[in-house]
Length: 71
Ligand SMILES: [Zn+2]
Image (cartoon, rainbow, N blue to C red):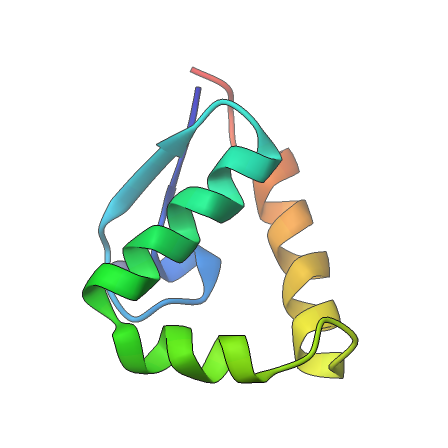
């Protein structure tokens, strides 16, 4: 189980989110975003998966996930 904060995922708050896999973490991040920061979720949904911002974000997030210790 790894714990990454909203901020480490590029979000605006320090809410910790936990998941067992990278995919689960993305889902946890997205549902937190929709609940806590609906405006940001809306902006992200408007972006295509090939948008350079999204590609850059995914690269950063993959690194954060890899560097976070598994508890
Ligand atoms: Zn947040």
